[in-house]
Length: 136
Image (cartoon, rainbow, N blue to C red; front, side, top):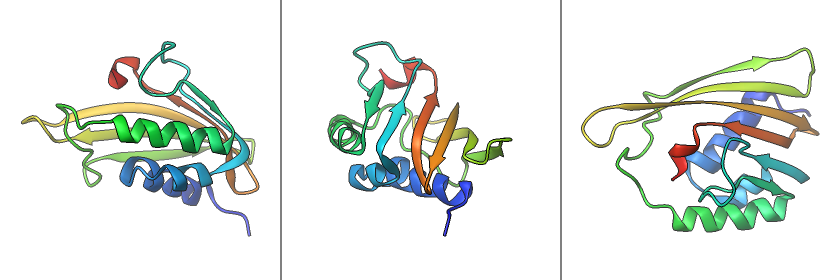
């Protein structure tokens, strides 16, 4: 049975943003899946391009291990929101996301867009567009 964009997106967010579980995140992708953050400069702390489930698993585990909560605090999932946009292509959808951080005394909203290409119910390619300075 094929998974819906909603189910795929929720699995991805739970594995990544909510639990920072690199194994679960990698399993959201096809064996040859690609995870890209094309706006990031080379050498950024967050990986710019990862190819293959195992590279995604390894690089994201290392990133999560190094990551320290910053001045923004943790994401507040109750205040955050998203809209999924389907496209004419049945294997492409877009997530428009506003993540709210409530640390540091006042809410900070970070907006981003992700483009998902799906194959067999898994992410074949994810392009994550966010401001590079968010990952300093």
